[in-house]
Image 1 (cartoon, helix red, strand yellow):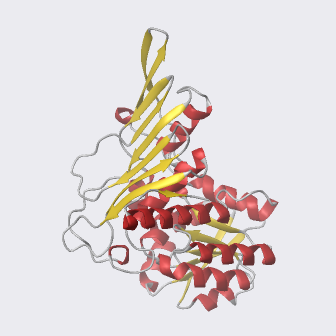
Image 2 (tube, helix red, strand yellow):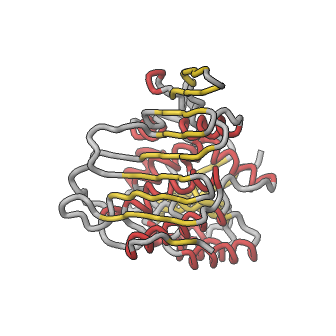
Image 3 (cartoon, one colour):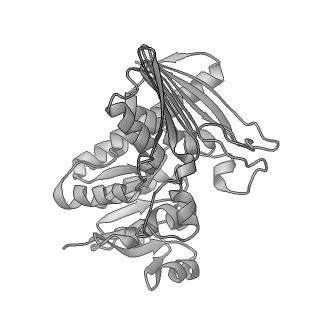
Length: 347
């Protein structure tokens, strides 16, 4: 089987946690080069992989098929543009870019060069989201009227990292908001309007660390929320329809497992803990019923498996560049709504 040769750009939290474990675990890929200033760390983790200091060292290598960009968000556009023009397939860590015009230009170049351009919205393969999506597809809840998701954390002290400093693409909305928005658009498509409250809640915060967004559809309201000073979490998912409700606590454990050094090839990868199985409440006539729903295992591996199918067999990308663009459009609209303190209707 022909392997896809990969150049990984950046070896910070994203590169070490969300990309290199899958690239190295799957037989479809071979990690050829890593762009990083942390040569000792890279080789400690990954063995004798070649470590280079410049993106150009990857782009000039004719053997490299795929460039995976995990640098800070403000660097995505230029690096992706260079990579596409060099004839490489590209995966961009979310958020895709900072502004929609950047996404539009990258999409145009990718189409002209006939190259894959995808965005790593891996949380489409969280165990809780997969479970919610199946319940909705099976029409168990009936017509959905309220979809509410929280991505809260308890990080009351501002940390010294780029995501918490002023700069393009920093802040909670671009970070965690990208995930929640992508999930919502994957389920419901583009909304009619956006209403948002986005601001810095913590002392000494340099960028937003709180958001509360409502996406408005005809009879549906999608509520996406994140806070950084939440010592004890409420439900992760609350989904209500005219036939029932689904309430789910806890969060997918793949990120925690990856941080602990576990491999996606481990037994029981992505399996939820039984105490976090969601509760399904349904109503038929005057009969009310409550069931515990076993969570579908999460699988970030699926994203990279589908990338391989796209490159090797011409199948659709697991997340398209256009879908990445729509996420940025909603982020921009949410920021405008929060700044102007009004509902913004989309074209």
